[in-house]
Image (cartoon, helix red, strand yellow):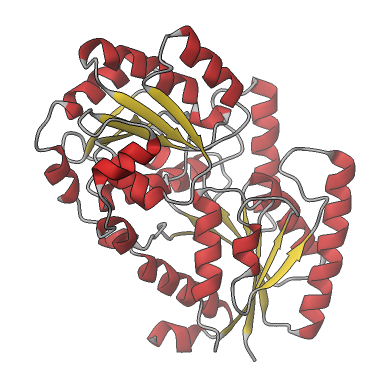
Length: 387
């Protein structure tokens, strides 16, 4: 009998966690695993999930990322009913929740449904240093309580694992480190005419081009990117900037771009499905996050040979090596962010440096293999230990 692996996430928007889940569910060994995905009924990646062969996709309209007590209770009830049915059909079942909201509701639904193995993957935390003291500690408490009914926890960065242990969320040997992985060849060997691609995006071919690829939400602090871009322009007047992504902060970004007189050199591209091609056009990747797990876009940039200037948060130091493949600065330090971006843009050997980083730990096949061993070990420890 196969092992049923049920992933739960609130929304399939474009993002590292969502792409990781879909790739994993598509590539788990179909002879050993039966895959399910429970998610909300919205998200740009829903059509991608529908196309995955063998994946049992279950949508719950009430499952949202925002806190809505009425809908949250309805989503919880529906998940309990679904998971009970799946467990009756096959007792070799585990759930793997993702994201703060789905992580809480999903694990409690699994506990109420009698699912034997309740795993959560931390792609970051729902609490952060920028929240109100009471709100932040309430989220920590909820996460701490939910950890008590969790079987194991997966972390994508050592930093997040240490933080969870510091808050008492992670205890004993509950935690396991499984890095994100990507198909690095898609970024390393993408064949494009850089000049033509830049022209398509609306940029001159000869000017330095800086990019940020992120959802426009408070976590990513995209307004800091605009402010730093303005400082870079004072030193490198022909420098151009793009942001691939969309979200709630787009109107504020557009207003700030106008206020700073950056309309001719800064473009917001919206959601894009050609990220490997866009990455190959860049001279530098910037990420201004206030908190993270370990950004998938870092791996993509280094695979494409693009150096990184980013904020020193959570798992960033585990992949960005100072003056080797990029530089880090404190969150919201606009001056330092601009200074380091200028340094890298003026370094003629920047691409060779970025390419020198060893990325074997972030190979997609390794990520899938580690999950297979981890999942299989719950039900067939000796067999999966040998393999």
